[in-house]
Image 1 (tube, rainbow, N blue to C red):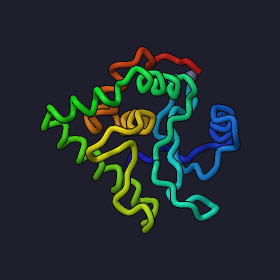
Image 2: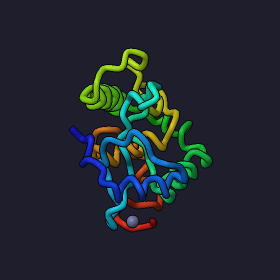
Image 3: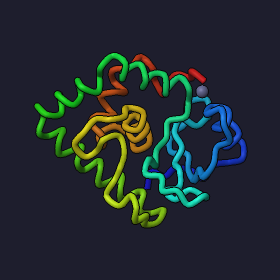
Image 4: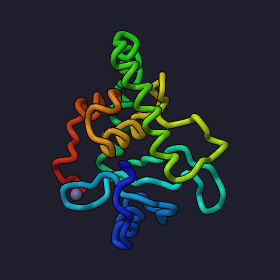
Length: 163
Ligand SMILES: [Zn+2]
């Protein structure tokens, strides 16, 4: 599954505050801060206005998004791309993470325009640490190797409230 609990009105309020805009099309909260606030939201792959939305897992807590941005600014995406190139086991895990992401999203309906397209650069590229960290936080360790690397490399932690 890993779509998370259905959002409460309170969740939607918190997420809107985190994003600085009204949160829309949120169907699940797959990861929470220790304080209970959402860390990641699941967005419907077909937005209410009809736009296809492949991202699925979206990092919302400002401290977490800043942590991802900092890793990207430090050049970690190129670093992980190289690390992936040298590690066949991680390559295979990353490909399986892509498959599992697509299978989870398919539970919310088949969206033709984004068929086979996941997020963050999966299955072979490293393009967005926000998406990959959000995926790892949602499914737990051992599924998305690159998201796991990013979470291990940042001082930010889901176990300490930084809301
Ligand atoms: Zn918190």
